[in-house]
Length: 128
Image 1: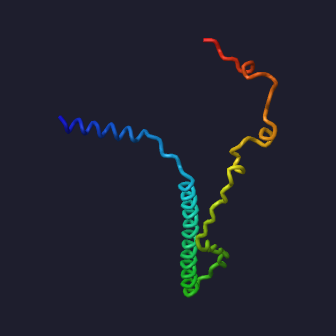
Image 2 (image 1 turned 90 degrees about the vertical axis):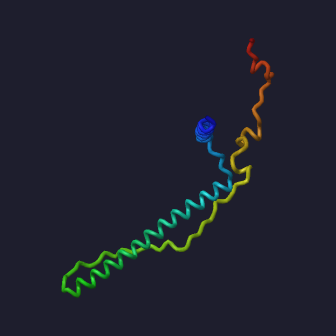
């Protein structure tokens, strides 16, 4: 009996945990995710570069064996492999809070909206 209750409790706890929202991303986590995305894009470029080099080696070997056999081949297209270079990530500059747009627009900040009308007249409370 106790085993069934424990099993049911674990199932309910797992379903409750699955419904919880993901934790909010911190700026450090967002920066780490951006760096990981940049590294993934760079590794894709490296893989494409290595594939291009391998294809060039295979084509060169084929051309050498074909010319040795006396076959006439059309000239090879001049494709070049672009070396992606070493990985270099520069994080975007952090804007100060004033420049991030977290405050009121400049017009509202320099001359706040004001009226001659009292707040009670502008926003009357509804009667209950």
